[in-house]
Image (tube, rainbow, N blue to C red):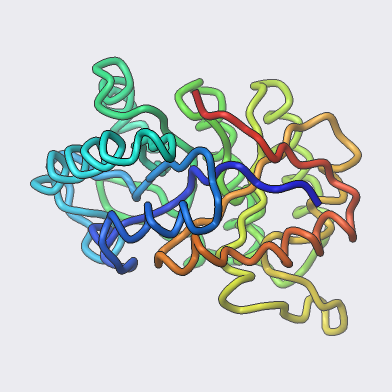
Length: 265
Protein backbone atom coordinates (compact mmCIF):
# COMPACT_ATOMS: atom_id res chain seq x y z
CA UNK A 1 0.00 0.00 0.00
CA UNK A 2 1.34 3.49 -0.86
CA UNK A 3 2.43 5.78 1.94
CA UNK A 4 -0.10 8.30 3.23
CA UNK A 5 1.23 11.85 2.96
CA UNK A 6 -1.47 13.74 4.85
CA UNK A 7 -3.79 13.97 7.81
CA UNK A 8 -6.38 16.76 7.93
CA UNK A 9 -8.66 15.37 10.63
CA UNK A 10 -7.15 15.96 14.05
CA UNK A 11 -8.34 17.49 17.31
CA UNK A 12 -6.92 19.36 20.30
CA UNK A 13 -7.58 19.37 24.03
CA UNK A 14 -9.95 22.33 23.57
CA UNK A 15 -12.82 20.12 22.42
CA UNK A 16 -12.89 18.50 25.85
CA UNK A 17 -12.49 14.90 24.70
CA UNK A 18 -8.96 14.98 23.26
CA UNK A 19 -5.64 15.23 25.08
CA UNK A 20 -2.10 16.39 24.45
CA UNK A 21 -0.36 19.63 23.58
CA UNK A 22 -0.69 21.11 20.10
CA UNK A 23 3.02 20.66 19.50
CA UNK A 24 2.93 16.99 20.52
CA UNK A 25 0.54 16.34 17.63
CA UNK A 26 2.93 18.08 15.22
CA UNK A 27 5.84 15.99 16.49
CA UNK A 28 3.75 12.85 16.02
CA UNK A 29 2.98 13.89 12.44
CA UNK A 30 6.70 14.21 11.79
CA UNK A 31 7.30 10.80 13.39
CA UNK A 32 4.76 9.23 11.05
CA UNK A 33 6.40 10.96 8.10
CA UNK A 34 3.54 13.14 6.92
CA UNK A 35 4.05 15.94 4.43
CA UNK A 36 0.78 17.77 5.19
CA UNK A 37 -0.94 18.03 8.55
CA UNK A 38 -4.18 19.81 9.32
CA UNK A 39 -5.64 20.52 12.73
CA UNK A 40 -9.44 20.52 12.53
CA UNK A 41 -10.85 20.65 16.03
CA UNK A 42 -14.61 20.60 16.54
CA UNK A 43 -15.73 24.04 15.48
CA UNK A 44 -15.79 26.71 18.16
CA UNK A 45 -19.10 28.56 17.84
CA UNK A 46 -19.69 32.20 18.81
CA UNK A 47 -22.05 32.65 21.73
CA UNK A 48 -22.71 28.94 21.99
CA UNK A 49 -21.39 26.58 24.64
CA UNK A 50 -21.18 22.79 24.35
CA UNK A 51 -18.67 21.56 26.96
CA UNK A 52 -17.10 18.21 26.23
CA UNK A 53 -17.82 18.55 22.50
CA UNK A 54 -16.23 21.82 21.37
CA UNK A 55 -14.11 24.63 22.78
CA UNK A 56 -15.61 27.77 24.29
CA UNK A 57 -15.67 31.01 22.32
CA UNK A 58 -12.82 32.58 24.26
CA UNK A 59 -10.51 29.76 23.06
CA UNK A 60 -10.81 30.62 19.37
CA UNK A 61 -7.98 33.14 19.13
CA UNK A 62 -5.64 30.94 21.15
CA UNK A 63 -6.41 27.95 18.96
CA UNK A 64 -5.73 29.81 15.74
CA UNK A 65 -2.59 31.56 16.98
CA UNK A 66 -1.13 28.36 18.44
CA UNK A 67 -1.49 26.36 15.22
CA UNK A 68 -0.26 29.28 13.09
CA UNK A 69 2.82 29.61 15.29
CA UNK A 70 3.54 25.89 14.98
CA UNK A 71 3.07 26.10 11.21
CA UNK A 72 5.76 28.76 11.13
CA UNK A 73 8.07 26.88 13.50
CA UNK A 74 7.92 23.62 11.53
CA UNK A 75 7.57 25.12 8.03
CA UNK A 76 10.76 23.50 6.75
CA UNK A 77 9.62 20.04 7.86
CA UNK A 78 5.86 19.96 7.43
CA UNK A 79 2.98 21.89 5.87
CA UNK A 80 0.65 22.68 8.78
CA UNK A 81 -2.90 23.93 8.26
CA UNK A 82 -5.62 25.04 10.65
CA UNK A 83 -9.30 24.37 10.18
CA UNK A 84 -12.41 23.03 11.84
CA UNK A 85 -14.62 19.97 11.70
CA UNK A 86 -18.17 21.32 11.46
CA UNK A 87 -21.73 20.12 11.49
CA UNK A 88 -24.24 21.43 8.99
CA UNK A 89 -26.11 23.95 11.12
CA UNK A 90 -27.98 26.70 9.23
CA UNK A 91 -27.67 28.93 12.29
CA UNK A 92 -23.90 29.14 11.80
CA UNK A 93 -23.39 28.98 8.02
CA UNK A 94 -22.60 32.70 7.80
CA UNK A 95 -20.04 32.25 10.55
CA UNK A 96 -18.43 29.40 8.59
CA UNK A 97 -18.33 31.58 5.50
CA UNK A 98 -16.66 34.36 7.46
CA UNK A 99 -14.00 32.02 8.85
CA UNK A 100 -13.04 31.12 5.29
CA UNK A 101 -13.45 34.57 3.72
CA UNK A 102 -11.26 36.24 6.35
CA UNK A 103 -8.67 33.42 6.13
CA UNK A 104 -8.90 32.73 9.84
CA UNK A 105 -8.92 29.08 8.84
CA UNK A 106 -7.51 27.26 5.82
CA UNK A 107 -10.33 24.78 5.45
CA UNK A 108 -13.45 23.20 6.93
CA UNK A 109 -14.51 19.56 6.84
CA UNK A 110 -18.06 18.29 7.29
CA UNK A 111 -18.47 15.94 10.24
CA UNK A 112 -22.12 15.52 11.17
CA UNK A 113 -22.63 14.36 14.76
CA UNK A 114 -25.71 16.30 15.87
CA UNK A 115 -27.89 19.23 14.86
CA UNK A 116 -29.61 22.15 16.51
CA UNK A 117 -33.31 22.65 17.03
CA UNK A 118 -34.24 26.01 18.57
CA UNK A 119 -30.52 26.25 19.45
CA UNK A 120 -30.73 23.05 21.50
CA UNK A 121 -28.63 19.99 20.67
CA UNK A 122 -30.41 17.03 19.14
CA UNK A 123 -28.48 13.76 18.90
CA UNK A 124 -29.39 11.34 16.12
CA UNK A 125 -29.03 8.38 18.44
CA UNK A 126 -31.99 9.68 20.47
CA UNK A 127 -34.33 8.70 17.61
CA UNK A 128 -35.30 5.27 16.37
CA UNK A 129 -32.70 3.92 13.96
CA UNK A 130 -34.67 4.56 10.76
CA UNK A 131 -35.42 8.16 11.68
CA UNK A 132 -31.84 8.73 12.84
CA UNK A 133 -30.33 7.43 9.60
CA UNK A 134 -32.69 9.51 7.47
CA UNK A 135 -32.13 12.71 9.48
CA UNK A 136 -28.36 12.24 9.38
CA UNK A 137 -28.45 11.73 5.62
CA UNK A 138 -30.68 14.75 5.07
CA UNK A 139 -28.39 17.05 7.05
CA UNK A 140 -25.20 15.64 5.54
CA UNK A 141 -26.49 16.22 2.02
CA UNK A 142 -27.55 19.79 2.85
CA UNK A 143 -24.05 20.36 4.23
CA UNK A 144 -22.36 19.01 1.14
CA UNK A 145 -24.42 21.29 -1.08
CA UNK A 146 -23.25 24.45 0.73
CA UNK A 147 -19.85 24.24 -0.95
CA UNK A 148 -18.14 25.23 2.31
CA UNK A 149 -16.43 21.96 3.11
CA UNK A 150 -13.42 20.23 1.61
CA UNK A 151 -14.60 16.69 2.31
CA UNK A 152 -17.05 14.56 4.28
CA UNK A 153 -15.70 13.05 7.48
CA UNK A 154 -16.99 9.58 8.42
CA UNK A 155 -19.92 9.59 5.94
CA UNK A 156 -20.88 6.10 7.20
CA UNK A 157 -21.26 7.31 10.80
CA UNK A 158 -24.96 6.54 10.49
CA UNK A 159 -24.15 2.87 11.10
CA UNK A 160 -23.60 3.95 14.68
CA UNK A 161 -27.35 4.51 14.86
CA UNK A 162 -28.31 1.23 13.19
CA UNK A 163 -27.42 -2.39 13.76
CA UNK A 164 -29.06 -3.33 10.48
CA UNK A 165 -27.87 -2.96 6.89
CA UNK A 166 -31.27 -2.80 5.29
CA UNK A 167 -33.03 -0.98 2.51
CA UNK A 168 -33.18 2.33 4.39
CA UNK A 169 -29.45 2.26 5.12
CA UNK A 170 -28.57 1.28 1.55
CA UNK A 171 -30.78 4.00 0.09
CA UNK A 172 -29.24 6.63 2.36
CA UNK A 173 -25.74 5.43 1.51
CA UNK A 174 -26.54 5.82 -2.19
CA UNK A 175 -27.83 9.36 -1.65
CA UNK A 176 -24.65 10.31 0.21
CA UNK A 177 -22.38 8.82 -2.43
CA UNK A 178 -24.32 10.34 -5.32
CA UNK A 179 -24.26 13.78 -3.69
CA UNK A 180 -20.53 13.52 -3.04
CA UNK A 181 -19.97 12.85 -6.73
CA UNK A 182 -22.31 15.68 -7.72
CA UNK A 183 -20.54 18.12 -5.37
CA UNK A 184 -17.07 16.75 -6.17
CA UNK A 185 -16.44 16.15 -2.46
CA UNK A 186 -14.19 13.33 -1.27
CA UNK A 187 -15.55 10.85 1.27
CA UNK A 188 -13.34 9.99 4.24
CA UNK A 189 -12.44 6.53 5.48
CA UNK A 190 -12.26 7.37 9.17
CA UNK A 191 -9.97 5.30 11.39
CA UNK A 192 -10.96 6.57 14.83
CA UNK A 193 -13.83 4.35 15.96
CA UNK A 194 -12.32 1.17 14.53
CA UNK A 195 -8.97 2.02 16.09
CA UNK A 196 -10.60 2.18 19.53
CA UNK A 197 -13.34 -0.45 19.37
CA UNK A 198 -12.41 -2.88 16.60
CA UNK A 199 -15.17 -4.87 14.92
CA UNK A 200 -18.71 -5.61 16.11
CA UNK A 201 -21.52 -7.92 15.09
CA UNK A 202 -24.11 -6.74 12.60
CA UNK A 203 -27.37 -8.66 12.11
CA UNK A 204 -26.14 -11.32 14.52
CA UNK A 205 -23.37 -12.84 12.47
CA UNK A 206 -21.57 -10.33 10.22
CA UNK A 207 -18.47 -8.89 11.87
CA UNK A 208 -17.73 -5.35 10.70
CA UNK A 209 -16.19 -2.14 11.87
CA UNK A 210 -19.02 0.20 12.84
CA UNK A 211 -17.20 2.64 10.61
CA UNK A 212 -15.51 2.37 8.20
CA UNK A 213 -18.43 0.05 7.39
CA UNK A 214 -17.39 -2.38 4.66
CA UNK A 215 -20.71 -2.62 2.73
CA UNK A 216 -20.84 1.19 2.49
CA UNK A 217 -17.33 1.29 1.02
CA UNK A 218 -18.17 -1.53 -1.37
CA UNK A 219 -20.81 0.82 -2.78
CA UNK A 220 -18.27 3.65 -2.94
CA UNK A 221 -15.80 1.38 -4.75
CA UNK A 222 -18.37 0.81 -7.50
CA UNK A 223 -18.91 4.55 -7.89
CA UNK A 224 -16.78 7.43 -9.09
CA UNK A 225 -16.56 9.06 -5.68
CA UNK A 226 -13.17 10.28 -4.54
CA UNK A 227 -11.89 8.76 -1.28
CA UNK A 228 -9.49 10.11 1.34
CA UNK A 229 -8.41 8.85 4.75
CA UNK A 230 -8.82 10.58 8.11
CA UNK A 231 -6.95 9.72 11.28
CA UNK A 232 -9.48 11.60 13.45
CA UNK A 233 -6.77 11.93 16.08
CA UNK A 234 -7.67 12.68 19.69
CA UNK A 235 -4.22 11.84 21.06
CA UNK A 236 -0.75 12.42 19.61
CA UNK A 237 -0.39 8.63 19.53
CA UNK A 238 -3.32 8.52 17.10
CA UNK A 239 -1.17 10.40 14.61
CA UNK A 240 1.99 8.38 15.18
CA UNK A 241 0.03 5.10 14.99
CA UNK A 242 -3.31 5.87 13.31
CA UNK A 243 -4.37 2.30 12.55
CA UNK A 244 -3.20 1.81 8.99
CA UNK A 245 -4.08 -1.88 9.24
CA UNK A 246 -7.75 -0.81 9.34
CA UNK A 247 -7.35 1.03 6.06
CA UNK A 248 -5.58 -1.97 4.57
CA UNK A 249 -8.51 -4.18 5.61
CA UNK A 250 -11.06 -1.89 3.97
CA UNK A 251 -9.07 -1.61 0.74
CA UNK A 252 -8.55 -5.37 0.60
CA UNK A 253 -12.19 -6.20 1.35
CA UNK A 254 -13.82 -3.60 -0.91
CA UNK A 255 -11.34 -2.66 -3.62
CA UNK A 256 -11.95 1.02 -2.90
CA UNK A 257 -9.35 3.39 -4.32
CA UNK A 258 -7.87 5.93 -1.92
CA UNK A 259 -6.03 9.15 -2.69
CA UNK A 260 -2.81 8.80 -0.67
CA UNK A 261 -1.51 12.27 -1.53
CA UNK A 262 -4.60 14.44 -1.15
CA UNK A 263 -3.89 18.17 -0.85
CA UNK A 264 -6.36 20.30 1.08
CA UNK A 265 -5.26 23.54 -0.63
